[in-house]
Image (cartoon, rainbow over all chains, first blue to last red; front, side, top):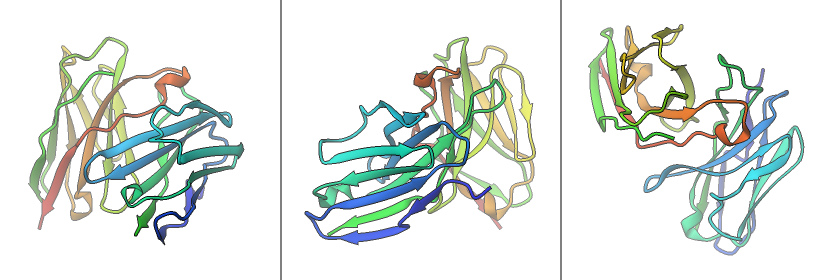
Length: 116
Length: 114
């Protein structure tokens, strides 16, 4: 299994530009999560999907952020326009069907975003 | 989800057991204790979880006190590659969608020394 795949691994952009981060969850997993990590705030949940439907987006910081999951194997997190304070590592994670002995989250390697 | 308290940092000698404590005094009867770790520049990695019985897998052991108000993650023979931030997370675990997310605290920075 290839695990959760994120791209790009590193992105450097200028303030005001649009940024799109991509995630491919583990095949068969029906939950997908987007997290953001900064030194100041640690790991924060932004949004999560179940069966491609957004369930909770209360962690999305503002309207500049949007996330989609057009199918079970692909999700995007878009920032438009980007600002320097959006600089962070963005993680995608997926999870399969829950049972009492399974259900852990599998994380990708993250996308490091730097907005100048 | 119940709040957890962990020491900010710990050191451990290579080859010795690393014992990482976690307090969760407000834990409810249906909340599980989860442990994840994050090695520098990587995504968090699941280690182990339990409800009230002690658990062991190929990575670690989890000891939960009888009153469930605290737990200890044990890495039996720490190696340099175990240097990471370790997160203790308490949450309700069920098939309900609202229970699937994880809320990460600050964790414990474990440094394994040669």
